[in-house]
Amino acid sequence: MALKTEVLITVISLVLIIGLNSLTKRAIRRFGKTSSINMNSRKIIFYLSNLFFYGLAIIVITLIWGVNLQEFSVFISSVLAILGIGFVAQWSILSNLTASVILFFSHPLRLGDRVRVLDKDFDWTGEVEDISGFYLFMRTDDGRKITIPTNLVIQKGIEILKKEEALTIETDEPESK
Image (tube, rainbow, N blue to C red):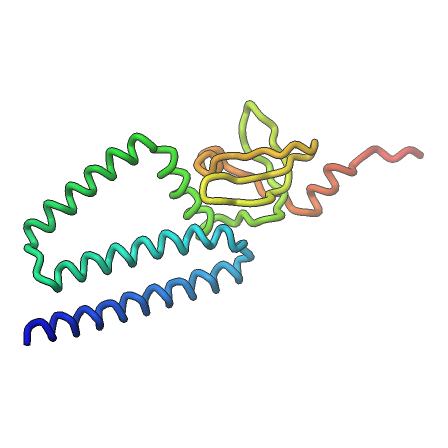
């Protein structure tokens, strides 16, 4: 009798988690379309969403099937310690992924925008061609194609130029009379 109950609770939990994952993907897709975010950027958020819900499903299933909570917490803390060491060793990967999520949800930067990277050493002004999980790709006004890590985009800051303003800066020449 207990086996049937555990199976039933497992199936119900999996259906709920899959349903929540589907609703989350739909919300991300809708937000991405209304904000004019390309599919490649949305794929990163889909991946992180899947990772969260799969992790949640594993935790719920192990608790349903009677894994000792104390042993499970020791296992989880060991896994998190190993992941923590790995992320410290690869800090740039974690910071770039985090910066990509921030750019996706709360930054007004979009593909096709004309931007100026605010850096005292470099004058990078151009058009954003793509934003991936780790890099912002842009074509500068002098034709160079550069990649900037997304964590630097957050750190340095970006000035989004209005299309009219950018065009008048380029074509603004004194008129001869």
